[in-house]
Image 1: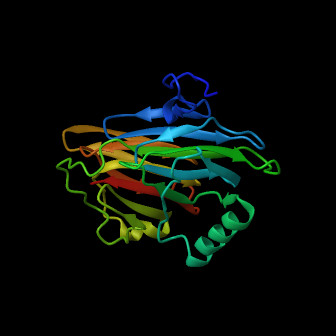
Image 2: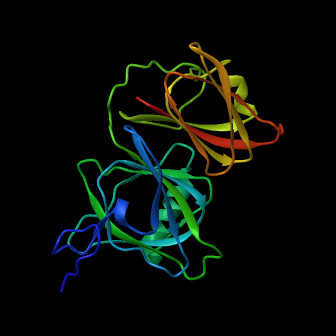
Image 3: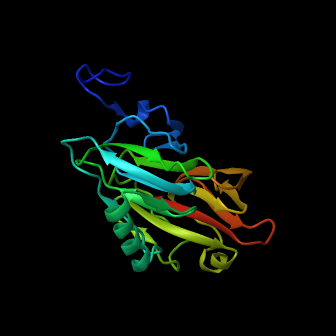
Amino acid sequence: MLQHKEGASIGQDWVDVGNEPNHGEIFKNEQIRVYVAVIRPGVETLYHRHDKDTLYVVLEGGKNYSTALPGTKTGKYVLPKSISLKQKVKWLLTRSIYGWTYLPKSIYLLMHNEGNPVIHKVRGAEDNPSDMRMLGIEFLKPGGRHGCVPTGTESLTADYEDDTVRIFCLRLPFDLEGLAEYVCFVGTVIGLKGTIRIEASSPDDPERVLHDLTEGDLVWNDGRRQFTFTVPEKSESKALLIQMK
């Protein structure tokens, strides 16, 4: 007997990801929706449906089991250049043999769900030492053109790129040499490690706003502000810069 759950239609045994209680929304605008997925050790989510291309950023890693709703297709995952072929093969073999995948902290991957909805549930392994935590960034307007030409990252190599986004994995202060004096784009910056300071300014507004990003923090740029990056402690920090195309 299929049971009705909040956020589902009568006769469905799944909910939309926005109604899954372990996926809490923290930010939304016309371009993206961001939530935090918390997967506790030994605890399973509800079956939930993803219908938007989604970027997952691992804030706290661990082993997890992902199970597609019987009779539905499995998800399509795309991995960035920064994940080695050896790691990809290891994940594939582990998933095939043991049924689980270990996602380490600070990596990211993409689920291509636009036009290819996926319904699955996720369970954290009982022996995970802590909760898994992941940022999920849904792209609400895939491939949409916003009319802003990104500047300031021309000398950097994108870690991932498709028709919707271009993603740079910044290692600071090393990559400061590859960034122009200021960066202008439509998209978001997500802190992964350490502290990244962003000075946001606009030619039309003399007031400058400072954002200190630590792990899991994000700041949105609508294309009208110029971002200048620094590392306050001069220590190693990491961030993702996600440009919407």
